[in-house]
Image (cartoon, rainbow, N blue to C red; front, side):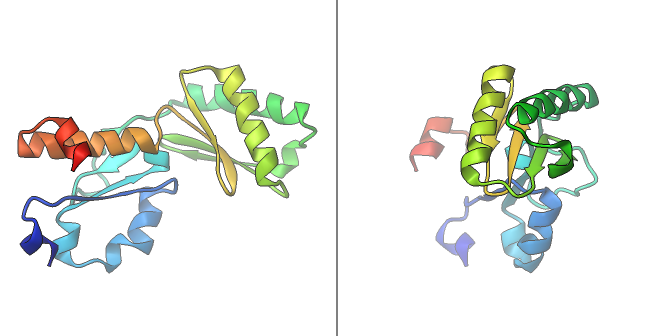
Length: 168
């Protein structure tokens, strides 16, 4: 039992997929004891829930993309993809609360990396753009930000500096 080893333990899952997918594939299979200390972050790290927090509530950590941002970013992505001779029919746009996922059918990781770099250059520093094994993803935050948020939550709970959490 993890709590016997460390009564102050917290766990976190940080996924590029949705929180719902994490719950379906992982969380539901864990013991109630583990779920009571498990933070779940999804959408590339932009949406995070406290242990046992109902998913219908506003996430404890939430950095959403607005409809206007999604529209703007999708338009820019189409422009970049067109410059790389990718037809719109090959692009699958998936809008998540905190992330825009652009799947490119029949594309290599090398191509997705080029597309992400071109988008990153065009968009600037306001958004994070990454190539994954299946898509190009755009968000305001990423998994690194989610790790930092989790460390901040643990530090607040233990009344210590976040640096102490990150060093442990």
